[in-house]
Image 1 (tube, rainbow, N blue to C red):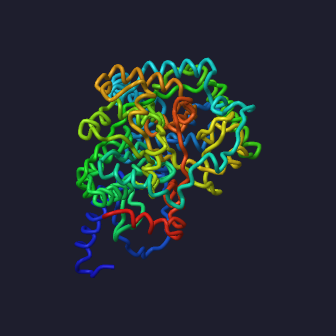
Image 2 (cartoon, helix red, strand yellow; image 1 turned 45 degrees about the vertical axis):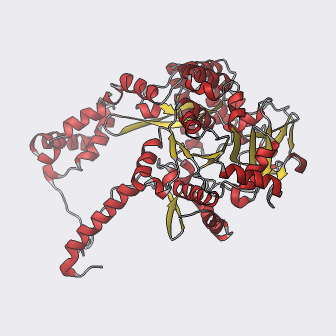
Image 3 (cartoon, rainbow, N blue to C red; image 1 turned 45 degrees about the horizontal axis):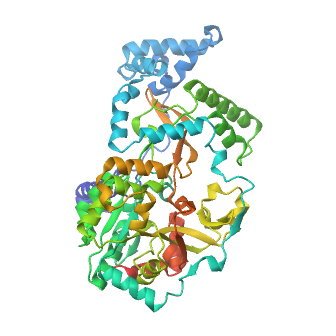
Length: 568
């Protein structure tokens, strides 16, 4: 409510404030539209109508742009006399009335839609792939496996005869009550000597967090901490700031990005001065990208027939069957397993999964830069950006060092809402397994421990898995070859994604396309990797995947716990 004499001034100020807020937050929070200020007035007439007669008795031009193309496709003998008279009036109006002057052009755009949206794609798509590290050799290998049936939706699952057993308490180290003094002192010494760095995985857009709005989850001001709303990145840097101050050594903090998130995160860090963090902050840009493929018909049938489907009424079922038949014919005619390029470039590419986040650090030179700046660096703490409670705990770090493991994985006790696999013995080997790889849903519910996707990694032992050492990081060709060799041993999980193809004047079609991803948890299946597993508290290991979790996260004390770890 405004004073009448200042209403116009206040409306201008409100518009400016909202527009500035949108520009500041548009990469972090979804906006449906540009903010507007409505100037409401009282309608003295109420609901009213106007009778149009003679040559003016026509519907709006946009109505005819939608209906006339359908009429022109009919046999002229089937058009009623009234509709004929209406079309005659429309023809006259298109020549004499200014409001219908553009009707003929719009009609042709509807009948013969422009295809200019894909004219420049042959040039722009290859440039985009080159810029973001597309590996043609690996792509061809995956496509060959897909076409030959070695991978696919059905092959995502482990064989039905795979023996899945729950991990026993003896298989894990229970760190929920803390660790012994000796390993804790090892961790304190490592922190004081700068032998550990933090890697926050922020390459994903967090589609579950914003229901597919396409913003950067890492920048979302998700909760009020330390007196104001903080983003995930600001929170993790604040925790590194507290650790640095406590142990007298600046902690290097790496934030991994992708083609979806790099630009906004880089701009955010510049604008905020690394939200006040005085230690080294490095961005690790993505150097792996995938090119989507036309789906295999067998995968379409598996998705439609072998997975749970909603039952519809008879007419809707017929419509759905008709659409699926058309999509099947499209896949056959376009070439099953061929490159999907008939769309805007950004609709043709896809992220390749978080397995590539650490190999990206080998490719883009970030790990080499870390080691050059600090030759004493030996360990990495790798975690998801939405694992809010994770921090450089000296006890867990010392425990990891004491065991001599190449990788120590943090798990939490499973609760009902935890979906996505966990820790299991698969044919006798203790490893992490993804939910989509389990032969049945029942197998997942039998697992006691859930993967928090937090890893303590010994750098030199990890390099050895890639047949590399610190000196070899300067050899780009050797690094790429080593990454390909290990990637070939990782499962490729196939998924179908619906993508829109816009054409003409606002028309759009939706096609299912195939893409793949590789997940870092499958590293635990490699026999040469020595892995240890530590059970941590839920406050440390819980991931915030949906805003609906925030209420319980605040009420159960997790927010207060996280705030106590940070130095804002």
